[in-house]
Amino acid sequence: MGVNEDFDAMLHDIGACGLYQIRQYTLVAFAIMFSAVSSIGFVFTAAIVPHRYNLIFFFALIFHLNERCLIGACGDESETSPFTPDWLSEAVPFKSNGQPESCLMFQSLNATICEFERNVQERCYSWVMDGPERTIQTEFSLMCPENEWKLALVGTLNNLGVLIGLPISGFISDRYGRKTALVIALVSAGIFGLLKTLATSYIFFVILEMMEPMFGGNIYGISFILALEMVTPKKRVVGNMVIVFAYAFGNALMGLIAWAARDWRVILWATNAPALLFVLYIWVLPESVRWLMSRGRLGDAKKVVEFAAKLNKADLDKESMKDWQNGQLDRVDTDATGKGDNLWSSLRQVTKSGVLLLRLALCSFCWASVTLVYYGLSLNSVSLGGTENKYLNFISTSLVEAPSYLITWQCMNRLGRRRTLCLTFVASGIACFVNPFVPDNAGAARLPLYLFGKFAITGAFDTVYVFTAEIFPTKLRNSLLGTCSMVGRIGSMLAPQTPLLTKFSKFLPLALFGVVALVAGAVALFLPETKGTSLPVTIKEAEEISKQRKKLRQNQEDIQSDQEATNQII
Image 1 (cartoon, rainbow, N blue to C red):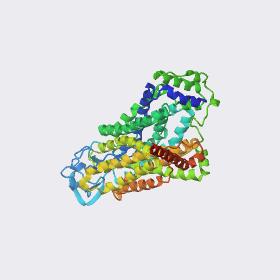
Image 2: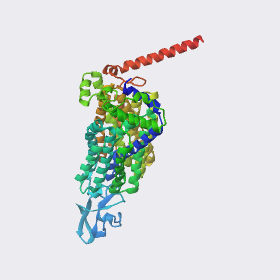
Image 3: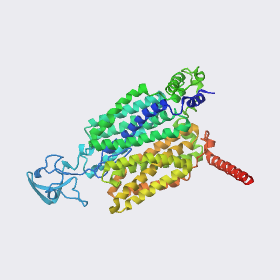
Image 4: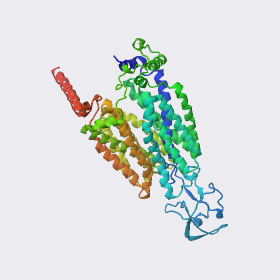
């Protein structure tokens, strides 16, 4: 038996859920919560005036701020002057919705007298704010409509940074270790987050906004690996629940912090300063055992295994590890440790298989669709959610993810992956289409409907992750899953731009999400079902998943027929 098989057997001896696992998951949960907070911070720091929030990411659309021109001749002194004085209608034009124009005022007849020529309008360059919220929009004077694209661009650049950072993080993770990569990502994200508070211009801010995820955008992925590898396969579902719950709670925590602070610099300080403490993970977080083994560092891997057994008070057969020493790379099956081929090698092999090439294209479309709808719904939830409290809307759409994961896992086990993916896409698409047609006098119904759409697309996100991992062969699995994830970033990069569609119609964002979700639901039906099948090892096995599934179903039918025949005889 090789060292990889030895380790798999040791997991059962160490214990499935002991003090070591609790310690590991607690440390990882804090990292994942920060990942959620870090990835959605720009939603609160770069809010577009007429919109609202995001979640996991994005953008500057969160606070529904209102502003008007500062009229010094009429008594305004600063941005905190009374927002609706009696003379306001004489000084500034109003929109059709009853709100004052953001950047227009009537021409002043005298710089010291509150008199205006109402037939002539002019631009203003100082503002009075309606409310305590402060974002980069107010900081860098981006209030006027022509600047909204700059605020939407913040979320797009954030996701572009993630896309660029994924291969960087992968290189560090493979070369220097999972723990090292995680600590670098956590601390770097915290440092860049704090540096953003020093930004003196929009350009400075967006550069830092893109650099932050370039170095800290893969916190979730690394944490996921570190958490799940030290539990037995039967406990991985429970472990995954801890991870996704931590992420949902991190999103909700972001909403609470923004609700309390309402100032972009205070928000950044409150969420990023604690991240500097993650440097302590260098000493308290164990390195990935499988990575240590893949590098031939069996002696270091042995220390982690023994430490886990000691915390769990488990009796470990040390005889099987007596000859584990560093430098024994020749004893390790690198494929078993998940190293596999690199991205380009994997893609070359896929091009030789029409079945896998089509499957990769379909999965990539599903990934791009689910990220667009997921982040888009998060993004638009404040303005379209249904309650006046934008923070409550954000927190609600964050917490709804937790029950979604539980129900989705049950559906995958009972209905299968393909049906679950199709149903969650379709359910979210229908919810998106119906929401805009809810009458204004029944606006309270919009929030439950909106939450259901987010609930469903969260289920689709969870399903597509598992589904993609199960339909590709072992040696190509990591690379192709990473390829789909990178393509999915196209959707998350486009999502921050969708609020701009409301310039043409308030229905367009949700209509777009509905169409994309329904098409993705139909595409999912062309993927093979993987429920109950063994993970394919070779390309041929991956191509024949449908045959394996058919054979499995036939065996189940034969067993059922034999049982019925036995019952009749009895």
